[in-house]
Length: 413
Image (cartoon, rainbow, N blue to C red; front, side, top):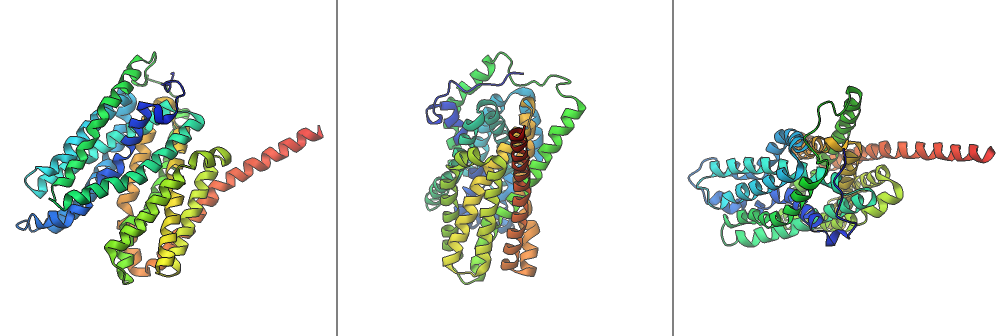
């Protein structure tokens, strides 16, 4: 089965489809965090609802729960019915369901719209990752994924900043930010046409396209990448989910401190992500992933030393720098193990794993923090990430040793 080819080899910044896919990737961060500045005012807007405090907090995580449940099926549908159409459908649903909070009458109906938003995110993320595999190859794919991680980091500032300004006027206005993705639809028309005009379009998948042995091989590899992604995201999520409580416990202004800490994390992450292609091309994807894990480990070790700003900001920056290599790294690994006709399925597995890591992180780690304290958990996270990194570096070292031995034998002959 042939693959969709990128139009020529134009620079990514001149390719309208590449730009649309980059912007589409930023919807992941828009989905959860955008309404955060409006939550206190939104809770106050429903004084007659006895569950307002609980429901408003749950609005942030509700889309992630739906993504975890829906993404595997969205991946299968992406392989069967085509990436472009499902991406367009997902973006349309994202705009409608995300902006619904601006006019729905009650918190329960707004919560329902947030679950629908998660359905849209599942469609968008699985189709988008599969399309990256279809359209970009070799170093160009690494470049795109590095740019994508940078775009996600930098867009968080824009989305949350715009929502913060709108929340100062009305707690309902930040929901209108979710309508912005409709501007991407004209750019994606080209993508759908390109997919339709391909002589052997991706999907539907032919019956018997892979044998039982082939299926077991790529499925096991995909599940392994998904498990690694889930564990890494779970530890990374210690930053956005637990940093406010860490700062509050140690006498800092949690709101301003969290903004500073996550600002250092996202800005550093965005800058380092731009170097991912160069690092992965030089060292290989496994080694680049391992390097990211080492940087994250160093960040958590710094945070565990002492709660002072001289260490908090560098620690957060190191975690962000490491995750800037880790996130495109496991997407590259997923696309490498996925057969072309199964990229949607594999992207569904990885998308589920990433969002499951976000959901599981506070549930599993909060009791441990309450029992052992932040410093101990940060040290344990550093040790775990170091072990993951060793697992990445060992095969690289073994391969280089074998290559060296083969070269020496060749010289002897």
